[in-house]
Amino acid sequence: MYPFKQTAMNDITATFGTLYHPVKAFVVYEQKGQDKNIYIESYDMDESGVPTNAHPLSIRESTALAKALDSSAELKRSFLKPEGLLPRNVLYINPDHNGYAVWHTPQRIVNLLFVEGLSIPNGKVNIPALLWKASKESLYIYALKNATEMDEQVLLYHAPFFNIYKDGKVCMGTVNIKISPDCQLEIFMQQWETYFFNSYFSHLMQEHNPVKGNIVQLWQSLINTRKKFPAKTLIKNGLTIKQLIL
Image (cartoon, rainbow, N blue to C red):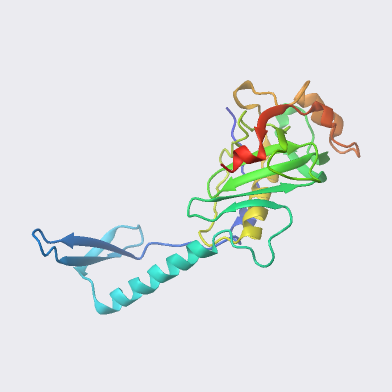
């Protein structure tokens, strides 16, 4: 199995979200018996992330910890929060800590990348309307034949790409996914689309062919042309939008 190749997108992912580094560790001790008094020990973290210098939690550290906990709650409230009005292409948001968003994109021209072994040149090509479902760690993509009227009963089709399992999950290979815990909705969507379209397509997953006919020949006939993606090549996967958000 050949994973996605890492591309120059490493240069832009640093602009997404916020990176955190360990500086403190806390151990909570509880006294046996009915009173169950609590004692907290604090550790500093060295450059390698190893706890050192154990000492009782100070008042200053207690205050900083309380502020951090308030900040963590705020980050959870910010995850998948839109910057303004809810984007029109967003269908569903689950803002929980392990939540996800569902959105759709129209037929459009994008730039696709293929490994040399497929004999498909890189370039611009028309793709069908797509439905995206993403969490902090995973991405599912499906094709749509009609994205003008969206409701729970809309039928989904297999996304006509390499590197996608039969259930719609995208194999991200070696791509380093970095979704910040305070990632707002618009950036979240942009980031996942950037990850997907800036990775190299390489192979079919578990021999699953997502289109009618030969997928290599299909993309060879479309790449760097003005041809619209032939909807007749799409295959139903038996799912509806409602089944994605249950």
